[in-house]
Amino acid sequence: PSGGDSLCVTKGVVSRIEMQEYAQAGERLLALQIDAAINPGNSGGPVVNEDLEVVGVAFQGIDEESIENVGYVVPSSVVLHFLEDVRRNQGGSPKGFCHLGIDCSFLENETFRKFLKLTDENDAPINGSGAKRRKRSTGVVVRKVQPTSGAYGILQSMDVVLAVDGIRLGNDGKIPFRRGERVDLGGYITSLFKGDEVHLTIWREGKEMEVSFPVSPVKHLVPSHFSNAPPPYLICSGLVFTALSVPYLEAKGAWNDFYTVNVSYLLGLVNSPLKREGDEVVVLAQVLAHRANLGYENHFDLHLYKFNDVEVRSLRHLNELINESKDPFMKFEFAPKDGGRLVILDRNRNDEVTAEVCSEHSIGKPFVLRE
Image (tube, rainbow, N blue to C red; front, side, top):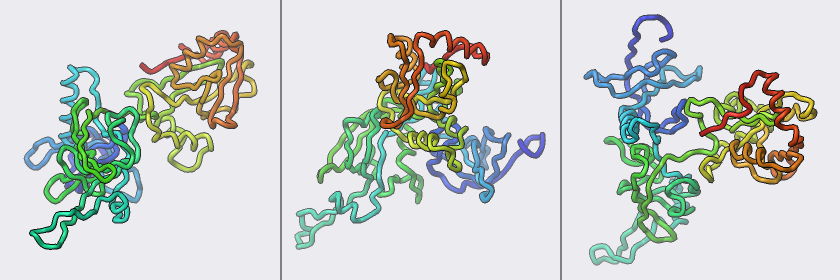
């Protein structure tokens, strides 16, 4: 690691245990925060306790000048889940960590809870007296259900999730963890495997009911990575299209200072739900100059909305539309839907122009698509 060549050992204490964003995986999973420094070189090393038992793997820190000695550890429970996932899939690609696939709002506001009738009076008196028992329920309210999640069609907007598998939720979305500690519900859901069924106690329109559905990993329209594969691309008459991803936006500095209006628009698509398996946000990344695309050289970072009046779902879909097109012209419409930029190219010369562009820039293939 940084600072020398010999074996490096650092010592610290566990500051907290909670859900954290895993920068490399793009997943929000359980993590240990420690006060031992994690520098380039010791990430990936084992973390052991006083009994020399491996309790996790060091994996990331915080890159801010004002913060010192804050590192994060992948706990052994997450590592064991990964290994079990690989075993269940007979050494193949693991399925990943499961999520409920819902967006929720917390219910810490008392007026919000009254609006949902979560605080109500029962008719039954207490011990024969005139006093009434006051019912108090806690939970989180569902605002949106991801179309590709197992909860789609079962949970509805404004449902209140009171408990999952008998575990009561707090109004802050947390559940009991260790003694005196609480953690986000995701700490439990991510411990499950694809196909495991969860049983939810919900509050809907003033009534408590039970529902169940299988959990599964929830994919996003804008992926955090391409699983170590090269980013996909498609070249059409010098126009270079790719699938929008978090690394693409990071390369553009989208989370830093303002870059361009186009990048700001693309950044707004990061949390968009995946409506159909295989969907992508197709982006015009750049234009490789050729006489055939003269006048379009300043078009880049644009979301391709339609090709020849057909909505484009992915790079693979765009490739199919181009190959099947019988029209003499290729019409590319970019977002926004009303008033976006328009590009018109010659379909009959596309193969010739694309080959010339690839040859000039030493590009072996005109496209690389995701599986």
